[in-house]
Amino acid sequence: MPTLKEVRALYDLPLLTLLDRARAAHRETFEDNEVQLCTLLSVKTGGCAEDCSYCPQSSHHDTFVEPEKTVSVSDVIASARRAKELGSTRFCMGWAWREIKDGPAFDHMLDMVKGVKSVGVEACVTAGMITEGQAARLKDAGLDSYNHNLDTSRDNYKSIIKTRTFDDRLATLERVNQAGISVCSGGIIGMGESVDDRCSMLATLASLSPQPGSVPINALVAVAGTPLEHMPPVDPLDMVRMIAVARLLMPKARVRLSAGRSALSREAQLMCMYAGANSIFYGDTLLTTPNPEEADDLALIREAGLSPMAPAP
Image (cartoon, rainbow, N blue to C red; front, side):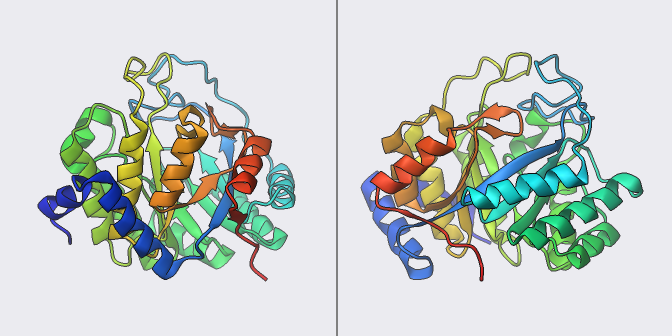
């Protein structure tokens, strides 16, 4: 496991030196100018029992989000088909749950995974904590990846979430890994954490065995009604540094430029990609928060001479 001191030393490198090193690591593993497009659909929105301070879907906060009826299996598959037509190669499904419950809802999830796979794209699920048996059943259904973000460091975690522990998070990631499903796990910056908190989170992710196949780096979207609604915007160069360090620590991971991207300029987004981000969420909404329009993303990719990742044969 990399130490906090070692990760902090990377984070504190002169920015251009850090970028050079991260770019070199990126080019050893990935196509130089390829970007994976991913689509995220909120299957079950709102009413979550967790008290995550950043999340408008928490039942603990008074926000614009109202609980909605769960999307049907057929509508999810249709959405995956549209996403593929628009160029996405991974389709991610989100449920605002503390944990997955066995029964009809979980059976529907399995049907959605099978349906999404039949469309010909990667399937990813994010739905809270998970048991060993559920992870095995999701693997059998064809699930490629399970998302469960650490969010922040162990030391800072209790200031952001009180309804579960950091170890609960790690236990879920271990069950996913044991089932042979690729882990998707990252975090959020801009929640009042220190630079050491950010580096500690990356060190924990890099210590997972195997390392995550996907690492989303999110900037806080401060939503009215949440405890973090008055937090200042994230400095774009902090995002660049986080992505570059993630690339160096986890060279084989897809580092995903995720929430908060709509607040970044085109130049800042391209700098993040130069630093090692090679995946973006594609579509005008990320669960319940804004995201750039598809046409804007395609224009940025085209004008920068980048290429969307081709679907698997």
